[in-house]
Length: 147
Image (cartoon, rainbow, N blue to C red; front, side, top):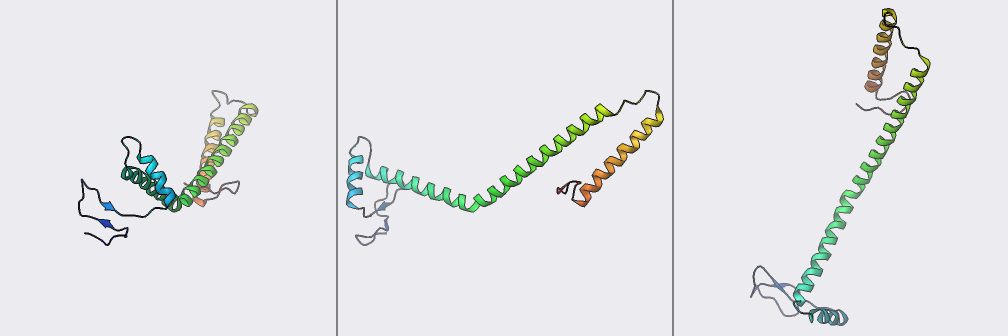
């Protein structure tokens, strides 16, 4: 597939090993810099341009991915931070409650079955209230609770 001289379209005649020949125009200063780089041993203009174009295309692909997924990832990061904060609040509340209960409520005597039964009733009431909060979707402090 030959094209007119002076165009940047690919020329398929004389392809080598999957390579396609391109004709392009560069500003004079850029051309001089390319010539200087290509003078080094084992370096060709084609290899320099192929590496540069590959890096540019990779960078463009990354920018495209950032534009596509960046807002979604930012939203997910904010949600994860909120979940972590709420978890820390819950852990601290539980720790303070346990410390208070252990310090203020005396242990139940071994033979006191009435006190143990009352403890079981209170625990059942507590677990029922937790289940109700989850089913409503709102906790005691107005924090959204999700199952």
